[in-house]
Image (cartoon, rainbow, N blue to C red; front, side):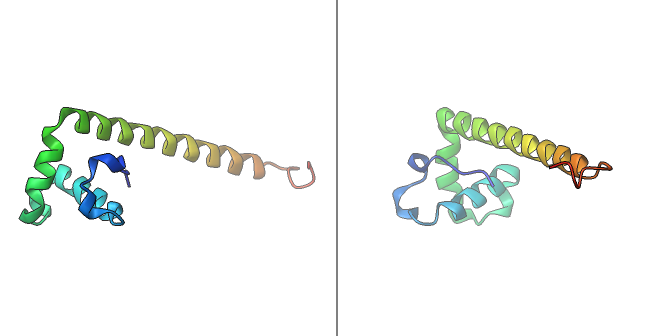
Length: 89
């Protein structure tokens, strides 16, 4: 789940940033999946191009990190599955 930079989330949600992040993600995917009471907050966040750019960059970075971690785990798994790997250490 992407994390919003804390300065983008209104202060009244302090301690619940994870919830706001999750709801904002749902809102961006399908506005109607989020209670209408949240719309003005997310519209304000969406209206700020800097916020959108920061959020998109964060999502992109997290995707790249996730892909790199996945590739690393696959490589480590393949190395451990090779014959003779048990006593190689």
